[in-house]
Length: 111
Length: 112
Image 1 (tube, rainbow over the protein chains, first blue to last red):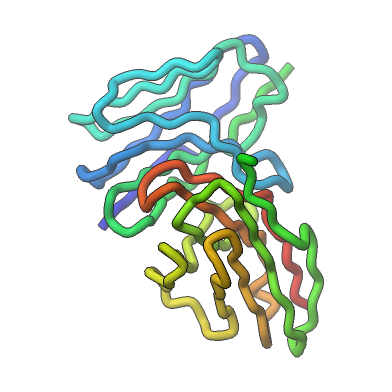
Image 2: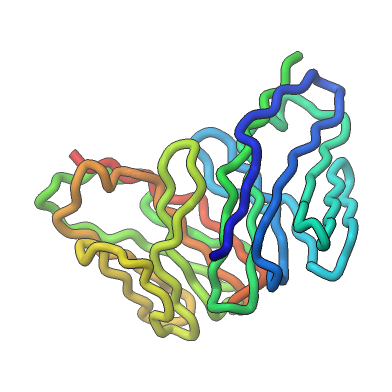
């Protein structure tokens, strides 16, 4: 079945770049998403990429997709303490509306 | 309007109570979802409504009863819940069944 995997923790220093990685198994994935969740809050859509794209950049965020290896990454440039949160990778396909989430990566940004 | 609105934001209920969670969107999205999320875990899909019809029920216990009165509204009726049902309940909507998911900020439910 579909599966999405992420490492659970990442710690970086303020001002450094953060790279959060994700792998998925569903070759029919249509869209891949990155969501951010701060403590006690809902899910905020950060960015998404269509499966026929390799890269997408949006201000400090860069998404890279290697479709052959089914590997997705999110790079946050100049990471700030406000970026501390849990980041979820998710994928969807044209198969009935399911959004499949990874376990989430807890990003800790140290001053 | 680009939001999904959920009410109430917080709810405490006893195991014999009946309550309802509400979700509303005015983006013209035709699919709506209920997810359950425990702390520091990914959201788990509960139900999917597509064009106001229930299309997916992920084997959710019958003490959770979804309802979609119209294309903008989604309810989750709760009855005889257990303490382990305490969680953040998230509503989402999407343009179709694979794109453009927008999440509400959730209802934090505590069952006592």
